[in-house]
Length: 298
Image (cartoon, rainbow, N blue to C red; front, top):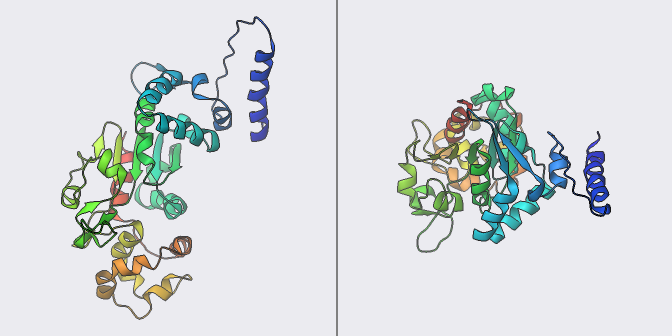
C-alpha cells in the first residue's frame, strides 16, 4: 500500500474497534512498515527480538511504564520522535546514529569506502543532535540491536566553557560522551580510551581521534576530514567551497590551521558535503572508519 494508505489502514482499524460496544477483541498485525509503527503508540507494539538463540517478544508498553517513571521527559521525546519520524529502527539489522546533515549526506559513501559489507545489511540511520542522542539509550538497549553512534569530541575550555581546539581544551561538552559512553568528560581520558571503553554491550561510540601519523586531533567531522585529507585538499579545484578554503595553501599550513578552516565551514556545511561528493581519492576519517568496521562484525 501507498504510505498514506498505510496510515489510514491502521487508523480505520483502531476506530472501528473502538466504535463497537462490549467488544473484547484483540487484533494482531505483523508488519515491516515504519508508517504503521508511526501511527501506532508504545502500548500497541510488540517487538520480536531474534538476535539470540531464543526468540523474545518484548512489550513496549512495559518499556514506556518503566522509562516514563524514571524519565518522563525522555519518554515524551521518544514518543514524539517516533510519531514524526520513520521508525525503521524496529526492523533494522543495525543502527547508525549521526548528528547532522553532513554525516547523513555522506554516510553512504563512508560505508562504501570503509565497510562495503554493510551495503547488504538493512541499516537504520537516525539523525539526532548530540544533546538528544543519549535519550535513546534505554530504547536501544531494549531493542538489542547493534548500534554505532557517530558523534563529535566537542572540546571546550575549562574556564570559558567555549569551544576551542582539542590541543587547547580540557573537557567535552558532548552529553553522549559525558553521560553514556564512555562516561568520560576529560579530553585526555577520551583520547586514551580503548575500543572496549567505547563499547557497552551492542552499542559503540565513535568520536574524533588523532589520524594516523598526526598528533593533531579534530574537534568536529569537518576538522577530522581536513586533517585526514590535507594532502589532496591543498591542490583541489573541484567544488564550490573547498577551492575557496584551500586556495594557495600548503599541506602543512592546512594541518596547522585545521580548526580555523573548519570554523569557516559552519555556515556552509551542506556545500562542504556536496564538494566532498565530487572530490577524488579522499579517505574516511579514522574514527568513522573504525566504527563502521566494528559495526560490520557479527
